[in-house]
Length: 219
Image (tube, rainbow, N blue to C red; front, side, top):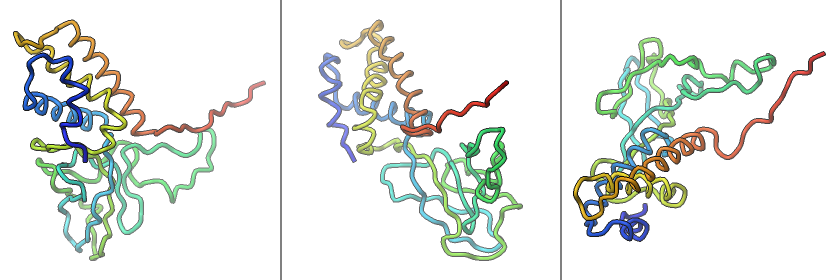
């Protein structure tokens, strides 16, 4: 984890008179927004032991100062059940896709609900296990920093520093009647943050690769 202090050299020179406590507050909120909207912090959750007839299970990860944002995919007893971002492996004109490898729910429907505090997943009756199985529920989900986080994952500093910097400066510079207020510059930084967040979301979903483009031959 990277402490908030590591960000100060990238923020303080443009914020005359600002306190570190104020920087920490807005940096934390910007990091939460980035992780919530762009889903950049993705991890496997701790495998869950299934209990026959039980629908609700607690979500947990090995990450510290983190809370769940969204369940991205999960499997039951090794069978793919749900994938929020599923894309068929083949183009629409190619029917070679193996159905056995495709998740059961892939059209936007979700076979579960999350508790209001996002601490539990509640499976629909159709997916409720009929028998117990150790580690039978495996999930991949997205996280965000908690409201009291004092550090951020290292990858946010190494890969998304510019976006976090832009968002934090934007929030602080539009504050009224402060020594560091700069509405024009704040607006520019907000535009940079919005663009950086959009790029981060795309990168988180697709990575640095894409499928080879294929076209049909006509005539």
